[in-house]
Image (cartoon, rainbow, N blue to C red; front, side, top):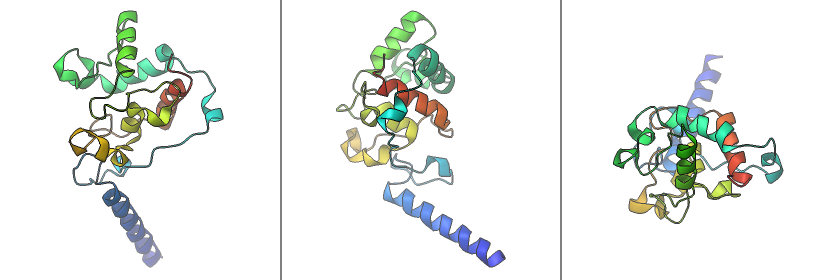
Length: 174
């Protein structure tokens, strides 16, 4: 029994090490950590029919997740240079309009890809950041690295939160 457990544990470690080295660790040029949730993953692909419903809205589904998960520090919660180029602290109608406009702009790390490409989740930089699938894009990014997955220093957002954002994008990011 112990031999089987040790073998299974060893196989898991080898598999995780292989996955991490294939994508350069955590996708930021840094060595892989023991946080297996942050090992670079392939971008999820979801059939369009699965993204068609339920309807997703920015105000109800996306903004609350971004405010809760991305604005707890000055990273994206403040206006100005300290927000890494993207303010996500949508608390008023004016803020929400500004956040939506910023998300439609090209990303700073990969100018050929907007943060959000309406109707195309697979070509939306925001989802690559949230899904931790940046390692496949690193060669195209400014300086050879697309940076870290988000939220920085925390586990990935729950699948349900990321899928709501994915649905919003697939449904046209309106």
